[in-house]
Length: 94
Image (tube, rainbow, N blue to C red; front, side, top):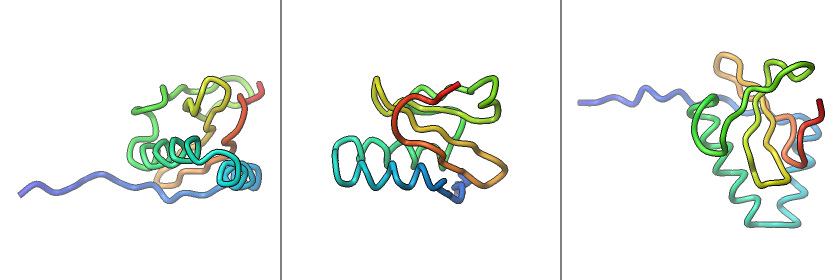
């Protein structure tokens, strides 16, 4: 018998990220579907997987990003068993 050892991270949204999520619900269901897929992947494996995970540097050290599209990024931080999403629109600012 094989047991599933995958840990799902508890997910929290910053106020900005939640506003971004609500924006996508209203504006673009296809992008929202992509975001949901990326979030699920982050919950399972925050540092590898789809969306080309990238460790951020300088003033965003400790954060990661994944590509939603050419223009937009999912920016998040993963600590122990907690995933905090901080942005779901535009590129991160350095």
